[in-house]
Amino acid sequence: MKALKTVAAIAALMLCGAQAPLPPRIEYDLTPIMQAGELRAVQIDMRFRGEADGETGVRLPNSWGGQNELWRSIADITAVSGATLAAGGDDPAARTLTHRPSARIHLRYRIVQDFEGAPNARQGNAYRPVVQPSYFHLIGDATFITPAEANLITPVRVRMRNMPRGWRFASDLQHPVLTLGRIWSSVTVAGDFRIIERPEQDLRIALRGEWSFGDDVFADEVERILGAQRRVFGDGPSPYLVTVIQLESPQQGWLSIGGTGLSDAFAFFATANAEASQIIGTLAHEGIHTWIPGLIGGMPSDEDGQAGHYWLSEGFTDFYTGRVLVREGVWTPAQFAEHLNASLSAYAQSPVREAPNSRILAEFWSSREIQQLPYQRGRLLATRWDAALRARGHDFDDAIFEMRARARAGDPLKAVEMFPIVMDGFGVDVRSDVATYVEGGAPVLLPEDVFAPCGRVETRNVAAFHRGFNIEATQANANIITGVDPALPAYAAGLRDGMVLVRRDGGEIGNAELEIAYVVRDGETERTFRYMPRGQGSFERQQLVLADDLEGERLAQCIRVLGGG
Image (cartoon, rainbow, N blue to C red; front, top):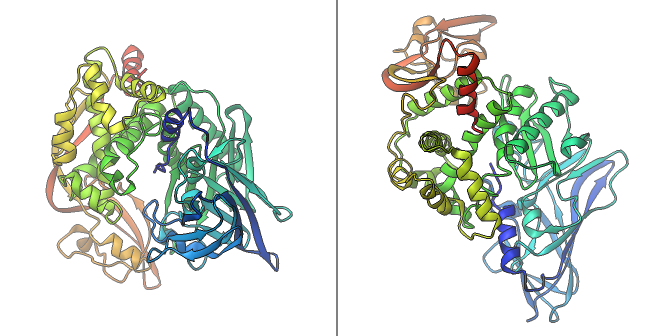
C-alpha cells in the first residue's frame, strides 16, 4: 500500500512556499554498529538547527502502515552537542530539546530490532525496522526522528558511513536533492544483498536469499512491468528501487507475499516459496501507486482517516493494474478475466460486503475481510465509470490524466475531492454512486455489457464456497486441521480434526463448483481427500464470460476496452 507522504504533497508545498526561503537542512548519517562481525544496530547521527526560542520538540516514529509504537526501535537517544534532551511528557514518541536560540544540534540514536528472530510471515510485512546479523532493512516512516516543526519541504541529506567490507547498499534516498517528505516515504537496505541494475529504465533491484527464480529473470519481469506502466502514464525512465527480503515461514506450506509502494521505490516481503509471477503480480499493483493517488492530488494528511478513501487510492490502483497489463500485452483478455473473476467471487462471498465506509475507517487494520472491501468496491466502481465515460467518447484515462494535470498546476484539492469535479466536466455525476456504494455499502454490480465486445457479465446463484474446515484456526495451529464441519462434504469425504494439512493439490479457492483436493498426513500415512467445497446456502455471483469468437478485430476492440488508450 502506498505510503502517504506523497510527491504531490511535496510539490504543492513547494509551490505555496516558492517565495519563502527553505528551512535549514537536516542531516542524517547512518553507521552500522558491528560486534564480532555481526550487525547489532544502526547508529543515526542527526544534525539540525534548533528553534529560535531555544526549545525544540522532536518526534519519534510512532504509527505507520498498521504498525504502532514504532518508537520502541529507537534506543540510546542522546544530545551529543548543542542541546539538553528531556522526555516529552506523557508521550513516548516525543522529546524536548533546550538550547541556545537557533543552536546547531547534534542528536544521536540507534535503530534496533524490537522483535525476536528473523522477520516472520506470521507477523506480516516487515514494516518495523529489521536489524539482522548480516543486513538491515529500514522504512523511512519507522526510522527517522524529525523536528516537530519541520515540514515536507525541509531539505535533508542522508549519508551511509563505514559500511562493512563486502556489504552492498541501496536506497531511494541516493539523490542529490531530498526533502523530509521523501525520506519518510523511503526504504534503505544494506548487507548481503545482490544489486541488479537495469539502466534503460533507471531501475535497481536489491534482493537477498535463495528463491525459485533467477535474479536476472526476476529483474527482466520487473523492468517489463515498470516500463509498461511508465508508457501508459506517459512518463520516461526515472530512478526506481525494488527491495526484496524473505520472511520466515511459521510452518510448512505457508505462503506470504506483500509489500508497500513508496515515493520511488517498492519494498517487497515474501516467503521463500513465492513464485516470481506472484511477486510480479503484487508489484504490478504497487507500482501504480507511483501515480495513484500521489500524482492526482494525494491523500488527506490525517493518516487515521485515510482508510475511508482507500476505495479511490487502492480501488483505482487495482483497476489500473489490469488495464496496464492488458494494454501492454502482459495479460491476455483471458488472464484479465481470470483475475477479475477471482475478485468478483471473493467480493460476492464477503460476509462484510454491505458494510458501510464507516466500518472500513474503523476496522481496516484489524479485519482482513474489511481490508479487501475498498479494493473491490473501488475497482468495480472504476469499471462502471469507465463504461459511462466510453459512452460519451472518453475513458477513465481522460479523468485520471486531467487530475494529474490539475495537481501539477497546483490545485490544492485532494484526489477524493477533485475526482467528482473532474468527472462532472466529462458529463458523469459520481456523487450518488459514492453515497450509495461507498458510504452506504450497497453491493456494486456490473452491467451485463460493461465489457462489450469482450463478452458478457453473467449473474447467477451459486453454492457458497467452504473448505469444510477452519483454515485460519488450522494455520494458527501448525497446520493441524481444526474445525471440520460434520455437515459439509469435507467431513463426508473423511477429513477429520487432528490430521495435518500438507498442501492443496486441486481446486480454486472461492469456487464451489470445482472439486478441491487436499493432501494431509493421517498418522504416518499421507492421504488425499477430494470433494466439492460447498458450504451452507448460496449467493449471487458475477463473472466475466468471454466470447467464443474473440479474435481478429473483435479481439482488438476488446483489448482497447480492457486496456484503454
